[in-house]
Length: 385
Image (cartoon, rainbow, N blue to C red; front, side, top):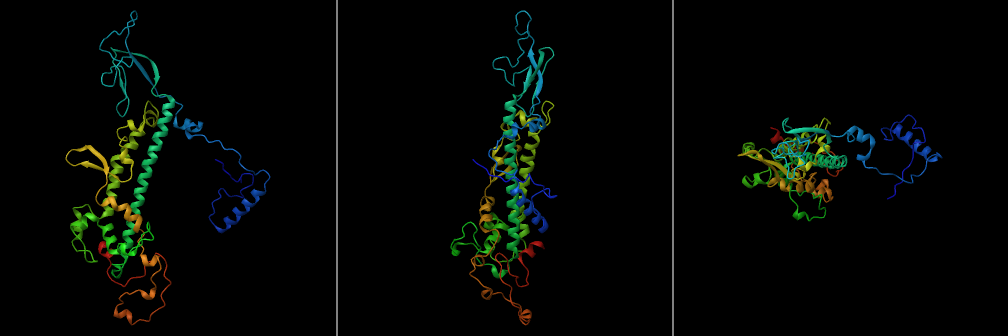
């Protein structure tokens, strides 16, 4: 792999601390700096670049205390000074064959979230100190845990962004006038799709507002929402975007927050030492890898509670939600995007009072902009009320 980079360090920045342009004046200054930098005899071409993993950076290791041993007391069973055999037969330490966390009496139990000291003054002898985890293993755990947290953060960001797109799309669909009820929407994923196969404003508006499960029970035929639709929605947790927001918040509280807290605990007097002490697969609150995937939500059995809580693949309305958002949001009419309609062909009923007013020249249509509808109650106004 080869990289080419221009050097601007040999020339004064002219008072500029950044090459980011924020005004016309700064644009002229940056152009002048760039021009003079290319004429500087000290400027040249980068021949080689050494790539070093961030975990091997000395400054990072000092700040993360990777170079500070995770020291702890070392315990062994008391031994007879003459026979070198255990004084107490019921004493079990890490030197015994088959020793584990269940039968250990001298040492450290590591199966739980935090290491637990097992020490009995009668049975155990403190023989010094030991490093809880090898330094190379600590580096590996730190890299793996950091990548896992970055994956979780990316998942939450994507779900939050999709929720924002969803809400903006519903707002736009609710702003459409009733005269656009049966107009076809543009498919952003399949631009060449036959208009005959495209859904209408009315269909996508209802699917993104209520969800398919609601429409299966209470199909809507009128453009205006039924007066009792809020009561009907109450048993289903609200509008579709409200239910999605609750699902994201539930995963944040039940999985993300617990995992972040557990994986950054202090271990053996090292702040956030758990990042180095254990791999995320060994931390109970983080090991459920399904929860880090898009398309999975946190569910709890209402009869048994948290012990049976788990992340499961979304079903019902959420299963098709991402596809609808990618295809039909932003909600543009197909004929507007494809420019198959002009302002002369628009047919909007104008009230008699407005019809007597002088007609002004209409503005030039802009792609993606909805023309002003006839003054009338909109579906969005119904929701606001």
